[in-house]
Amino acid sequence: MKFLQEKIEITPDQDVSWEEIESLRLLNGKLILVLKNQTTLEIKDLNPKLIDLAFRSYERFLQQRYRH
Image (cartoon, rainbow, N blue to C red):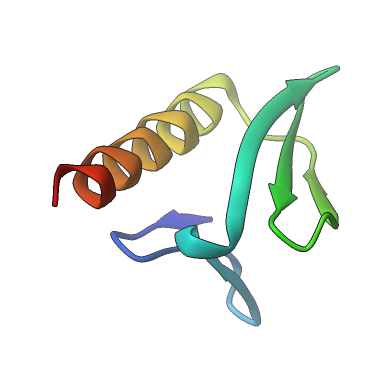
């Protein structure tokens, strides 16, 4: 899993633009991506450091987006 400036790369074949994400949630140890089209993606078996990195990356994206 990679957290890039413009997207989150879940697998080499699956990525989601930060623009598509409505919110991030943590539920029973799973990272939940709630998309603007109201679908959800559940990512399980992440270590706490990756979960923290996901939230910090999304926060950084939001700060840059609303700064302009």
